[in-house]
Amino acid sequence: MKKTILLLLAAATSFALASDFPKGSPAFTASATSAMSAAKKSGKPIILVFSAAWCPPCQTMKHDVYPSEEVKAFQDKFVWAYIDVDDASNESAATKYGVNGIPHIEFLNAEGKEIDKQVGATSAEAFAKTLSSVLTKVKKS
Image 1 (cartoon, helix red, strand yellow):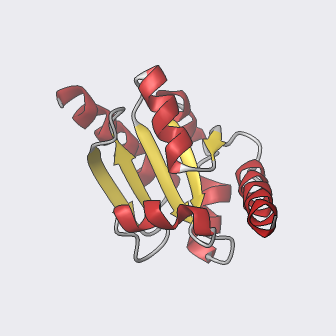
Image 2 (image 1 turned 90 degrees about the vertical axis):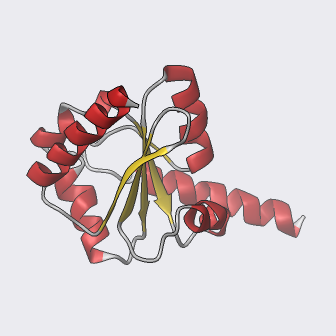
């Protein structure tokens, strides 16, 4: 019973985090697993954003970069996941991708192979350039 309650709380927390985005943000899922599943169906590359509510650079990216005009052109070209590093259910994904600092952003192809990564915040313009570069790398792989 205790485990069920904890799982429900974790799911509610993940949903709250995933739904707490400014208007114009990408359609984020709340786990690496759901992103991988969606990517396999769609064939789109994956963006895993490892973040936390207490991280100021993460919140800047969340509010100023992901919903920005520069990034909007790329939103439907990727499967996006916003992964809370404080949620115990995300511990294995954070370990798998070597998350030591946040924001930590993994760019993967539809099969889950790493294409690129970014650690730290950046501007909307720079992030859009990174997204363009990732798409080019995906096409070459």
